Length: 370
Image (cartoon, rainbow, N blue to C red; front, side, top):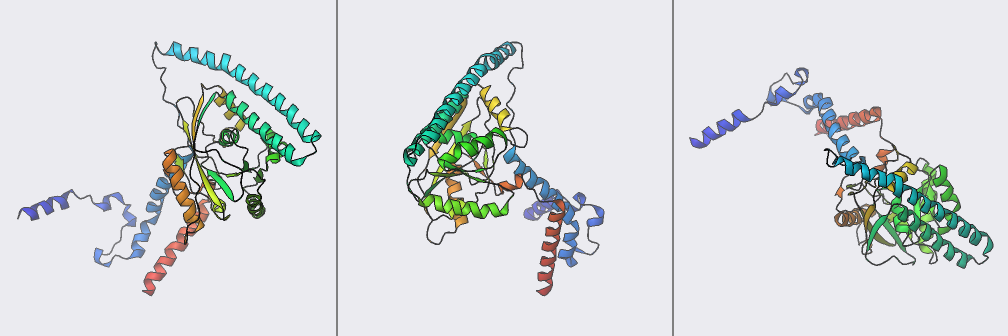
């Protein structure tokens, strides 16, 4: 008797789902004759709810978290004002001067070596060192506090380095230690000028995200690059876009189909002074650098992890996920099952509705056949 009364209480406490659904979406037949076709009548409601959850989970990967205000009382506000004066009135001009002097010295040395040296091997070696030096000047202009963990990458064939991606400064931080040849999206403006005139000297490869034919050309360049023993180590950011350093999106499988060792690199920024995430849709790279140069410091840890190889019976996608697991665990990132390219090319509502309709029709057809 006690168990039956408890069961009755549970039934009374159970919410009535009909209260949460539109009246016109409820089936008029008895529950015994409920069909999948009736459930699909409420699919717009379910789709809208699921879409909101998915959109929130996806956009969370690309949002900057504003720092919590701490200058909220009369005692702290003067200290905050003093900090603003120091950062913008003293540190920023000094850092800007450091960057300017560094660029002048770099261009003078780089173009002298590029046009005067005849030996290709010696010229490439000096140019690599100059690029590393200029990246160190960039890091100094942010007062970068970078800790590197693990053995420094070596130059040898049949290897590729992959890292999580937060900002274009990821490349600068890694490049100051080793002259990587990076795979990077083509950029306009002064960044594009540096890509064409300087970074090509270290073997960097550029691609256009919107050009499908360009992908085939880049894939061939990647395969050729990893085979040559004198080329700089190849660096790829397989997420394909900048993520806010709290999450990691799906890795593209291209870097894992080259038939060589994959060396993971985990990058984690400490947001105590500044958030290093670059949202390219809201901010130019120039303004992103200004934000870094007006902060107290950029604090970052870099881990060079053990090289990984494709296991027997393992697909390139499984290999990519295994490496992503390693990077996420080391950097303390949350994995999400989204393609980073959706940040730039979101599917249209019409396309999404068409896919849902096709899926519903296929399910109904299979049920009718069974």
